[in-house]
Structure formats: C-alpha cells, structure tokens
Amino acid sequence: MAVHHPNRTQLLGETLTALSAGWQRLKDRNEFKPVFGWVRTTEVTRGRDGSAHPHLHGR
Image (cartoon, one colour):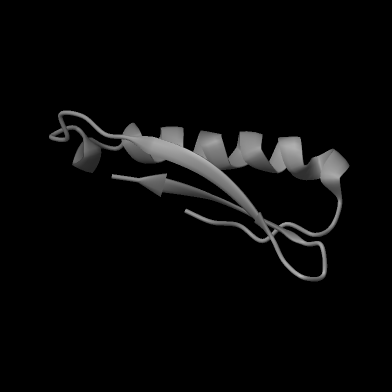
C-alpha cells in the first residue's frame, strides 16, 4: 500500500495514521481470514523535491 504525500511534514503523521487504518480494513476482510500470520513494515522515502512517499510492506 502506498500514498503520495506532499512536502508537508506536519501532515505526515495523519497520512501514516490513515495508511495504518487502511491496512486494518484490509486485514479485517473475510478474504484475509485464512492468513495465519503476517509481517508489516512502514517506510517513508523522500523524493528529490522533498515530497514524502509513505508506504507499507506486507508479507
């Protein structure tokens, strides 16, 4: 999961909260029920223009 985030660090926390809520909705779906375990990491990379690219890695 990924979202584009503009160069506004004061809103990055809100974006990460929304991204986490999206992951929660995904894992609450019936299609996710057979999954016995998973690992999730959160990463924020920066573009040359200073924009943030928050995203999740799930496996």
